[in-house]
Image 1 (cartoon, rainbow, N blue to C red):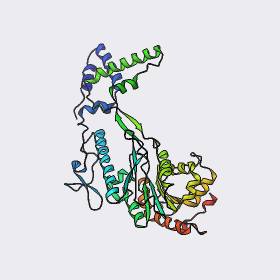
Image 2: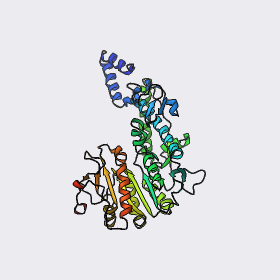
Image 3: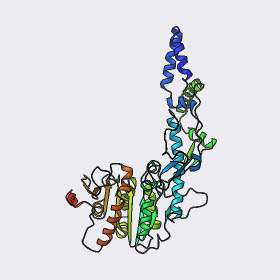
Image 4: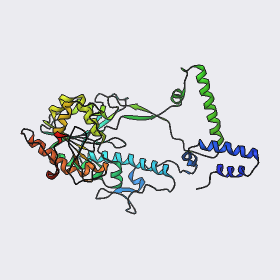
Length: 409
């Protein structure tokens, strides 16, 4: 990478007299204000990437692993050395393609249908969607509801990193969906991170967002002066850099689905609570666990009446911070298990300081892998819960030699 001319100019100035040294000091002060990542964007290739897997020259092989179509090699993040920002943007572009690819698998392989939210959305308003099996609302016996965690993941995913670096089985919800359908469950797949759409700001909107006409004249004048000084400094070093300016966007939130918690409550009200299933089961990962607890706080009686068992995987919920009442905590102790990241063998009891659901090991120390590693135990837990529903036997997925009495915690 070429040495930025500003550094060369500084070296030349340091060899001059007092006036030149004063300019050097000014330049040093200027450099302390410059984001070096921005400074180096002058050498960055265009942020233009393919919009298909084929364009990236990647495919998923028969094992569900992402591989280069020509070399068979796994995905390489550092495609261009010393260009972390560009590599990150490339990774994000691939991630968006992966999201659409998984949506396609939900429809083609799992035979789920996409359902638009809000249910009464107008043509012009922002929309989201969920996926569900054909019998999700009519299955009289069992319904499985899947909730992923926070971040970039969307419906059908547990972790984008796993999909790209490991395989589809560990990174997506597809194994859960297929097994659930095989065992006679209806299925609903939530999409709690699809909370808004981004639209490009018009020049008028950009100007409006920076306009401070309601401020006192003195304050506005002071701000204008600061902005002019900032622009002057920026113009001074503009010739030393050539950043790729990204478009300014604004977020338009989806009605009644503006957060994971809102989304979970909305889907409960309009779908899950309306389903014919006598037994509803949840699998909620990470922040999805928090969303479930919030749902229970808001719809306690309904959840208790309809939900048979809940499997959390490394949930980040907190019954104290979320102010879950005593009756909720008691219900969670009886009907939930949290498979947490741990070095202990799968299903080994793990001590907890919180008075809610029992915690057991997911058999992995990696947070994002907990849903996949606990997969067989989760379905065993659901089967036991169903069998025990009308008896006094409590389902216990813990290893017997390591059980602890959670009622004493």
